[in-house]
Image (cartoon, helix red, strand yellow):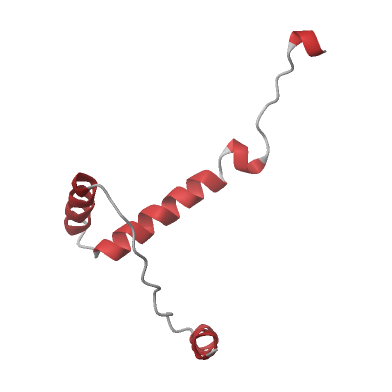
Length: 79
């Protein structure tokens, strides 16, 4: 309950909330590439991954599948 109270106080005060630790398993080569890319951008690993996830979510949200505008083709036999 305290965490929820703290989160609502942060939100109402405009203060950034603490981030939730998450454990993921990544291919070592991919992790090395991500670390290098984050360093090139002068960003933390967390910030780089978070930004990449947000960008991907935005792409998926704008996709035709997400918007329901995927064309439906009828089979000639079923018309």
